[in-house]
Image 1: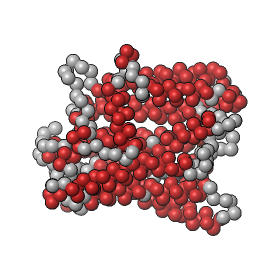
Image 2: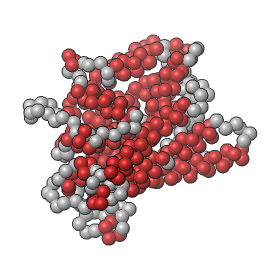
Image 3: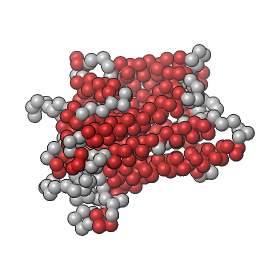
Image 4: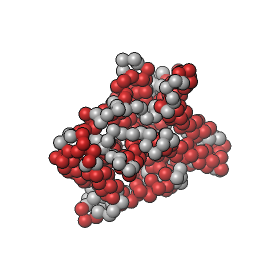
Length: 411
């Protein structure tokens, strides 16, 4: 992540067709579709996601699986936004002035989307219990809270991790509201990512990482108070995880300082730029290591004897429930590449691409896509951990879970 890039000084062609409020709505709706696909695929693989997040299961086999309810909600949201953007195109016809004047149409769409997550829609057969659970979890997580294991701790962690990938989207949502409410402003004009001052947008981007940081400290505190402390370790892994999320703050801070630095301050800019590059590198590589070694329990970064063990493919683990080894290697490579999209700024030929609204949107989309793929393997790992202990891994408040030591069990 590299903070908020600069944008074109005029209303660009991409924004004439796909204004910022619709881009925000699109990625939010994409999250609902993505979660439905996560649930669907993992259900096919016989991984019980609802049990992992302590969500009530279906009372009988006659009831539709959970992913069907998610698909219904996603379809309803898609239809609403699809109708809105068609109306907007009919009125604006890509005319710059009309695009600016009719900003109330996409903003109304955002308001409707927000209402659909809050207002019960039982008569329309749109999931109500699931949305209620989501809102309750969001309220708890937004304050940096963390449920106990029996109440769905893993679900809180999963949601908070997803929020970190939506940091830029939340910042753009704030920009839309700020521009819309500003006198003589328009939410569909050239995005002003300094709207509300140079502090609020970076602060909003930092909130999701701060939430996960606090959750890690809560986990560490629970481990230190646990009666199982001698068997589970002192909780150092939670402190290391907290350190990982803290590396996002220098990236955001230095990126913000660079954007707001006066042009004559060239010497200062060079120092800040080097500091920003170092912060990005640390954040990307640390996060990539954690994805592979801790979140997915793969052995790629383990000692040679474990990494080269003959009972599993090189650098992976013995039980692979998602797919064949080749898929895991491809996902590892993809995760590294998408963790390092900020490196585009280091290339003189590609640096300007990150300044266009279309490129900004693509980078946001790729980060959401990366997190969507990450969920499959993170849930798989938690499922295997639960099977190896006979309890949920969270149920015994593990401090330093002995990754890759799974019981022998046929898939």
